Image (spheres, rainbow, N blue to C red):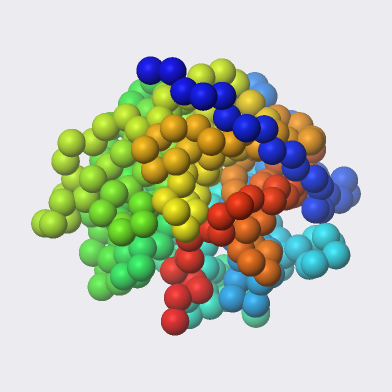
Length: 307
């Protein structure tokens, strides 16, 4: 199938992570355990907005939770012995963190205290969780990625219900990463980094999954799709690591826009913000910057902003 070439959209720098905070060197345990191509010093991920419109993200190898004020200044809100990767707000104000080292963590944004929330599936520890997403009913979906890939397609996708039940929905994914649901939340989209694609995961009435399929196949880059988001029209936004790009696909899977990084190529994740929720914020970890792009459709309302 051939598509019309997507329209290019520009980006600009909103904030730059200070060099004095990019302290993860070759002796850092997380850095030592990663394949070549991982940015030195820091890795920005997990962009999210709180109810007051403040931008938050994480610095994975340095174990930091960061808040960026409207002037673009970074503030370290917490630093702990962990590897925070994904970050989302609960509508009660708590921060939930997909911690690559420990599992799902919980943080009080006022005190900065970080504590374990879910570290095991039954008696089994997770491989290394990566990203997370709240459904409108409070279900928490998260990916368990570790170093899985085409050589080891055993990455997993979990659902944690508000009453504490944990379900493993998939256990055969070659590097599950970012995830988001479609507009009516009948389907889960999962970024499969090492497969360079997006899986479409239908959710059945009984809670299981069936007829899981390939929704978008990407190519190129040295990484693959990482963080993903959805807009108010059901379009899928994909951060493509190694391409220095963020793609916008319509709900049928046809490409509309290619948003090009004005910095480096390590475009890891995305979140909508701004006064009209039409500004896309992009974590670009190669240069340690937060980029922005102006879009024509607002992002889908997140669980954290629901009444």
